[in-house]
Image 1 (cartoon, rainbow, N blue to C red):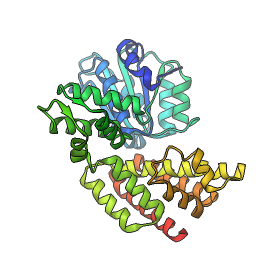
Image 2 (tube, one colour):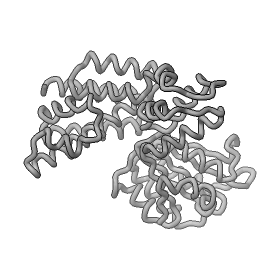
Image 3 (cartoon, one colour):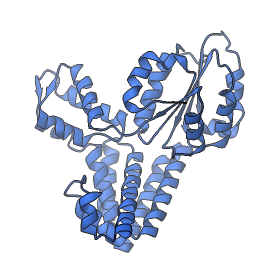
Image 4 (cartoon, rainbow, N blue to C red):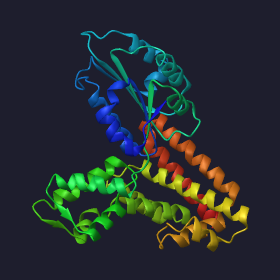
Length: 345
């Protein structure tokens, strides 16, 4: 078994990646999943611009032809040499798990396989296979913590020889996160905006990232929990205009309902009042969001929270399986949740 934690990835990429042929990269941070898949692909020795050496497959391609992965892995390249099979959009498909399980028993001398998956639950088929098989590397990708975000900021600003004040750094950290690629693009945008300056100040951050994804996503989630359809639609327009992935909203909404579920369970188990559980499980929330969460705890009972959590998880799975309809599925699901909050309120 080889599972690479976030803090171990850079070392693994530099020293050990060449010892493996199969990689399952998964997690809620789709940008980080994509970024790490690209980094591993770059270490395989395969020419990524060569259509004969690199074969990219969407999970839909395998759904139409479940045996294709085995066929592609066994096929000999037209000109020989290394070959990379890169699969995107995986969830927990049995035909994929079966194929990977069979391939894990073989010697893949000239073929590497990278699988990009979504947020796999503990014990799910694909994750269980990856974590329990010696020849497969499991690489979980969770949203960046403050340490990782600060490292990202330092790396991107260093390329422009820029420094940033502590206050501006704190403001920037609060505005990014959740998706590695989106965060990196926001920092690059700031660096471009401040090119030629010696120091980035707080007002520079607010000027260029004042309407960035973190604020907009929180606004949308707050509107959903409040049942305010007008604010929800306004937030979604802002998110669309900023080119932020709609998937981040449904992901953030799911996390919020998971928190509500944990809070409600704590309240029932220990017979706590709403204010008491807010001091424990809700202590990390921004003070402006706490009244919204308190109200949601009063209006959503435990059964309703679990039903809504399951529905959001199902919608996320559908966005992975039908990526062309991702925005429509997410928007329809989130609007439905908003209306549910409105009726309960």
